[in-house]
Image 1: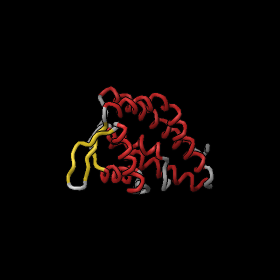
Image 2: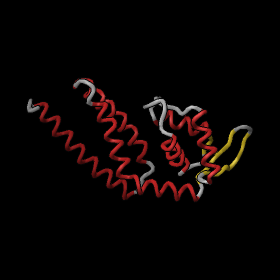
Image 3: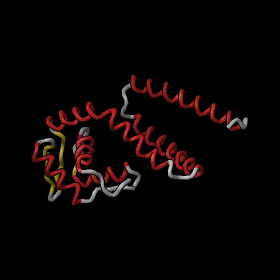
Image 4: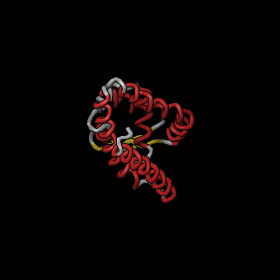
Length: 166
C-alpha cells in the first residue's frame, strides 16, 4: 500500500466509510490502518484537510464535538455524489484494482508469486467471512453459489497437482 494516495481517492474512501456510520477523524484513520492490514494510515496532514473540505462543500456534516474530537456523517449531498461516482466508475475502478496488483505481482519470481497469492487467499477468506455478516439473505445465496464454484475449481487444481498434470 503506498504511503500516499491521491487526494481524490482519499475523499472517496472517507465518504465510503461515513456511508454506514458516524466517525471521527481518528476512527477513520484507524479503520484505514486496519483494513490495509497495518500497511497504511493517512497522516493527519492529509486526512484532516480533506475532512474540512468535505464539510465545507457539504458532503459531510459535523454531528458532535467532544473536546477536540469531531464526529462526522455523510450528508445527502455526499450520498448523491458517492452514488454518482460508484455508478460512473464501477467498471473502471474494478479494472484498475485488478490491474495494478497484477502488474507488481508479475515482477516477482514464480515461487514468491505463489506464496503471495496463498497469503492473499488466506487473508481474503478472513475478510470475506467478516463481510458476510452485512449481506442480505439473497446476497448470501449468491455468495454461497460463487464459493461452491471456487471450491470446485480448487478441488480440480488439487487433483491436477496430485496427478502431476501441472
